[in-house]
Length: 89
Image (cartoon, rainbow, N blue to C red; front, side, top):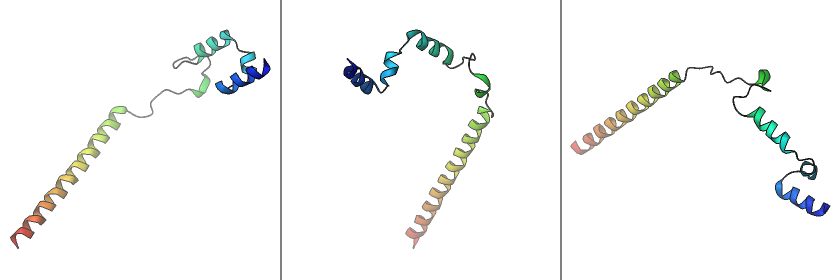
């Protein structure tokens, strides 16, 4: 019996003692007190407050994409101009 228990524990990635001392009540208590949003055992370690404005980040990303697009368009214009000069010669 001990050998089977040891093999099952190894397959599950837990200790043999964890299986022997398993308690559904403890599992439900753990889940109930640790779901996101629970403040029962959170203490001072949980901080779900944003330290930035998400819209500011979105606007900054939009502006960066706009600058990259403008640089890409300018590079294409420069390439076309260069090719036109080559054709003229």
